Length: 111
Image (cartoon, rainbow, N blue to C red; front, side, top):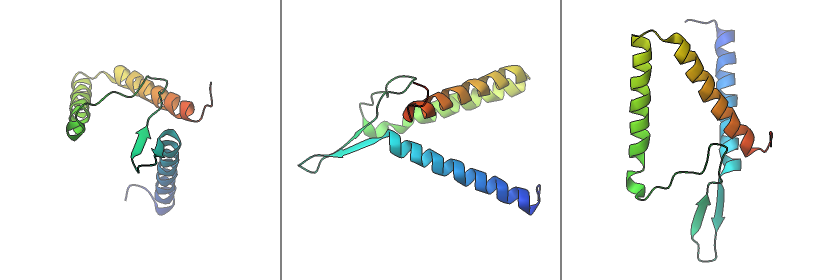
């Protein structure tokens, strides 16, 4: 193994803690309402990066996600190919900044 048992257990524990925090954040963010007729509506409030995108056809809602993953993967391969580590670091910093902004916005921490 790459790490000894103690380090592995700490890493697994940290992973599980982050997953539980993420599930709690999603639970706080999404508003589920059930009306008298039994119809369930799910609301996604706006975040600091804007409103949720409107999806017209729900059965094809996975296509934009797949395209975004493919474009992101291609960009990562280009950064590796041209050895642009500095761009990679700033891109990671930007991703963490946006993620933390959304997280803090859900709990109204920095508003």
